[in-house]
Length: 113
Image (cartoon, rainbow, N blue to C red; front, side):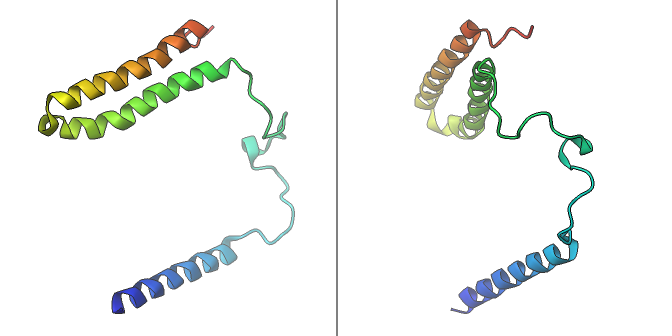
């Protein structure tokens, strides 16, 4: 029970400290004279504008490599203990990701010009 009360006290103190830091560093409601977006330049388009469809294959290619690295590190730490089944599972996973890479290659995501 004492630990729970201590954690509650730490939480309340952290929230109070965050609110106090906000009050001391916040802008006092007057409008900014320069925009913080793009070093003060006025944006040419809306922040929620759509992206061109040619970026989607490149995005999927990035995700394929990103997800691969996300799962390769934990796999590398346990592959010796797990044995052959872990190696087979990783190659199956990489085969699924390779399908995405080949699709992006076919769509032209690897052409930079």
